[in-house]
Amino acid sequence: MVELKEKLLKEEYHKQKNIKNFPVQALLDISEDESKFLKELGLETIEDLANKWNEQYDKMVKKIPKERVNSWIAASRLVSLEETEKVTSGAKIIMVGIDNAGKTSLSIALKHRGALSLLFQKLYALTPTRGLLRSKIEVFGMDIHMHELGGQSIYREDYLNNPQQYFIGTDVIIFVIDVQAKDRFEESFEYLKQITNVTNALKLKVPWKIFFHKSDPDYEIDEKSTEVFGSIIEYMSKNCPFFNPAKDFFRTSVKIRSSILGAFSHIFRGISLIEQGTKEASQKVAEQLNADFFGLYDSRSNVCFAQYTTGEQYVDIAHNAYYEAIETIVNIREPFLRIRRYTLEDDANEIFILRDLHFSGDIYIMAVLTQDEEMATNLDQDAVQEIIENQLRDWIEFRGYAAFPLD
Image (tube, rainbow, N blue to C red):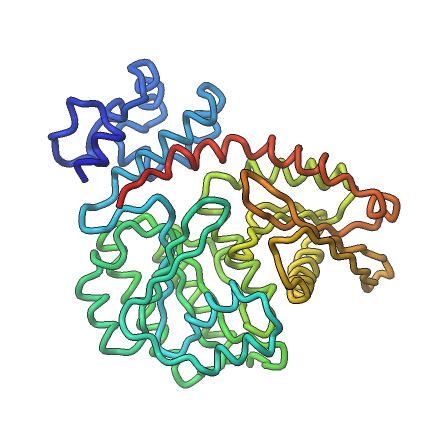
């Protein structure tokens, strides 16, 4: 922790304790005038800046260059982590739920690029997770640390008795419920209540997401199950201030990979600092291409970290088309182009285009749905790439600031 202080704090604060209570001017690159401005916004301490930045972000960037604001937020989040939690330069997502809910299958399905039959072969060979299982995916230069908490009762007791060891420093908690295990709804609901109680006791301001998993296309959810799920959403709305019933629950299934890709992409965009910037960039690209959907995917994780659509009906089409196209690409490091045509229910003919883009030595994948035949035939890849790169420059600079060698 000493090295972190030296990197981010002014010298007079290096030997002091209780970092989270330090005034914002303790950060190395915040001037006295800037600290006064932050205090006027109610961001007096490093902890305030780390936890409440999103409430005042628009006001901050109107007066201060966005790249500086982003660097302050990154620094405050890093130094405010508890010393009991290993410091990382990315985000931490916890997946929790009772055993056999499908937590491991979610992360495997997200990253899988092969045929669906090969995915099922992997899933059939899975064994129950014992204790804590860590994995990592990288999304546009940001490390996403996935912490899956094994759901067997012997492990649940440890999480509930030592919550600070598992939950401190968390950016998002995902609770996974098996919609087909009707005989275990009560057990799952009770465990959810226990987890929310301990996180509330720790005063963690962490967003919650509920996955109603194994919502397969051929499985019909009955009226009684619907009532249970409604009770869960109602409970979360009343007991978790950082749960939004309108957007924080998802129906997921490994048989509908777009459901998993969409859920995790939504979560990542919410915990990063790039959502608004990439939305604006994506809209500009979509308008230039006369497209109903534009998405930019990370080739390493499949996450769609930037997207814009003129209608939600196009999102699932694009995500499913993305997976189908990726299955046929043998070497993702080689340049590629995929085009496919779809006829929708209103007889609209959509052209799906998938091709690679390159930023700072990394490969990303662009997906487009458009009805414009001429544009699809004469796609200007260089112009598209230039727009995206210009719009994402602030985020690239922010990642360079945040990715300190902390190990």
